Length: 554
Image (cartoon, rainbow, N blue to C red; front, top):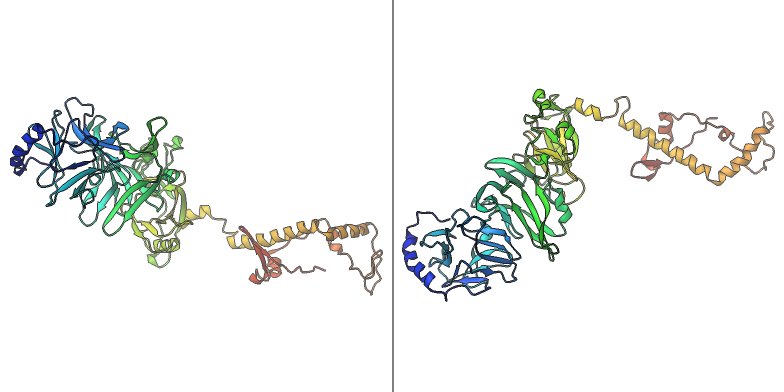
């Protein structure tokens, strides 16, 4: 940016400025996308991108007497994408954009003062071009030369496809959006929209230096608190780059997608807008903050916000916690959050009775100070958390592979900014054994026995159902007639039944009863060979079917 401490430019301006205002032949060609040395752009003249989508020129934002150099969508002049001199407006319509002898882009006012500069230098000839993406670039030599400066590296309040926000880890340079001061004043406003590169990357809105909104961490598919991103993934490709050189977020539009932009408004809203050609208007696809629960830290540490629960002031404590200040909580002041009811069993890293409560469908807590390991499984993450006395919760890092996810995020500090979201993620909250007991079956009815008894009994019931519809039932119906005509039995001799052929099997009279004896667990264990895998004849989603040996009771 230009500052008043640039006396070396004044001698240049004394020579350049008179030439600029006298020579009209040096102006940029009408509808041209290129500005090169010896040409300039004055108020009323423009550069237009090759496909006509974007225009660069001077505009008044609504404040009388102020003029700015900017880029806007050609089909909507009010959709300003970038402003060069946002904090140094021109006071009349006699500004001019030129290429200096040092190959910098200069915006000069009517008094010959530089109000904005690209601050670039070069030895070769310089060409400036407005690309179809809306990016204004400066190149060495002709239009195919290397880019030495671009407007995409200096965002205003708008993120276009192909732009990025984040941080260059080698130089420390940061890219972020800043709001306008008001709807008709492009000057730098109070709000910033950044990519927080600490912990797991996430986008954050700041009011001054205070966090007021957070998207949740990137999970490989979208930001965990902006599940809406999945509903328009057919239109955009999201790019979260995390490398030794940079951590950045941006997006590109797929072929055939209408014009779109991400805008940070002057009143602190972040919107994804898509152009509707039929109505010739911008449609809001997403807006954050979207509701009261998007207010950063609405329910304090370990508080959980639910936008569908106004009766509780939208806030509750996560399981195993209670309000830190009950009186304030009753007065709907939840800023102090919640505290744990029962102390965790640290176990000195050797053994512990602690476990985890699964919180489903949430925006993951703030990851600014979380630790990350992309190389381990979720089960290994659980083990690592239990072995660390300071671990409070864990979650998978990456969901793009499907299933429960891979990698590991571990929180060691207060869990902040938790909320329910539709389609949210699972968070595993460390809890004391006594808190886990509420969700477990009674100790007198352990899970292993439930499975061991239920599965064989279900198998027996299914066998009886199959028997009811089998040919054996028809034979059994014939044999049931014998109930009214008891058979004659000769003592001390093989039992013989009237009306049964000699080569037939005798009827099983035990089946004639209308009830069955209770089957105890020992009998089931014996019948299945102690639930031997060799006796398994089928498996389903909720059961295992065993082949059993029926032991005669006679």
